[in-house]
Image 1 (cartoon, rainbow, N blue to C red):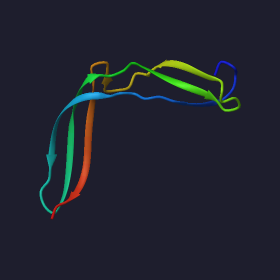
Image 2: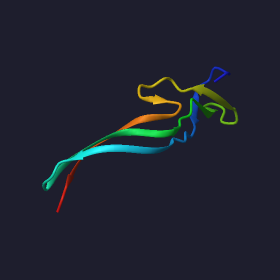
Image 3: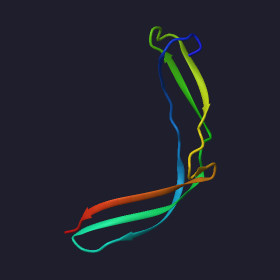
Length: 89
């Protein structure tokens, strides 16, 4: 915070993507599933959050920060994957 205090903050990030995935599922009563794909959509490059001072809750600040570069994530989409175990009956 600009006043040198500490506090807490909250924000929301919308990750709206259309996902295309390919996968493999084993057979039998106990099965394993693996999927990998790509989520196409607009990925935000910044996050805006509201910070509130712990000692003076009346003091709030709005901050915008850049989201750091992450492997497999770009402005146009992200790599996605899933692994799972299931029981069939």
